[in-house]
Image (cartoon, rainbow, N blue to C red; front, side):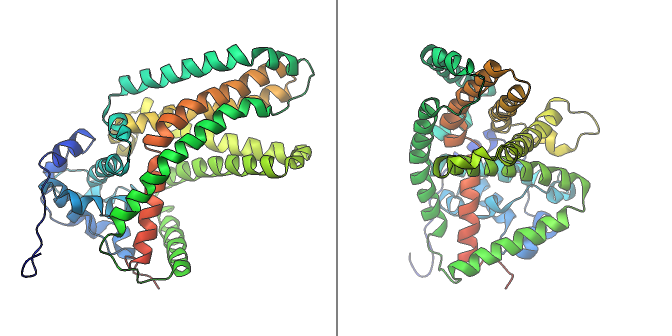
Length: 372
């Protein structure tokens, strides 16, 4: 710092990396500000999307790593619809988020995962899947046959141990990355708002924004897809916690089974809808599903869909008295979970849930929210 001026380091490869990560229209932006002007988020948050894009064009990495505005984008698409240059600001911001996530990750593996091709991702996923498949059916097959012969479906704790171990490994990877993200975002910012008031601001913000957006058909579809995924994942996590703390709850079969079906169907529809729209894209398909086709967009859906499908099939087979198939579906559910947790949950697009929460928290604490 000299005479009130600040020396800023430039990373000349930053804009090229963001371009490769899906920001194809990065250089089309000429800072007119129409994206910020039409974005409903800008009415509630003191953020500048064009500033983030400009920093990226110039390669100002230290500014980008601490910028929460890319994480604020909810992909409503008003900016892309109104851009006079035909650019896609929401797509650029998604690419910037991938770049930020690569830098927040302390292992360096996120950069490899996010920069790799879809073919490389699928082959890596299949390799982990094959190893998990051989492990489970090699070690646990006799036990599965033994329990299937009883005619009852029991959650075998022994089968859960490898998945729990992998989940712990994923959390050990994510925790330092989340902390790094927080340190980058909070740097040089003052905490002006209390913790509980921040939570209230965030809740009010989402309720108002999403309620207004539900009135627009193409926005409503995407909001519902995300809500269904969150409901499905949230219910599964809640049921897992209940099983560990109070397993007798599952003796109330009607209630527990209803919650499991709701969780499975919510997750399956929430993931299946955008996956189908991307696969079956036609002239009537909204541009969102045509533009957001980066390998990370595909893998977030491809890896989660079979998990949701197997979770549903476990209880469909059980209700049809096909007990052996129910146990096989349960084993496959756990097998599909392992590559999902090791790859997508730890390094891929699903890490964005964590960074997005941190960004909103930092924004609320440091006065980015305009509401009271």
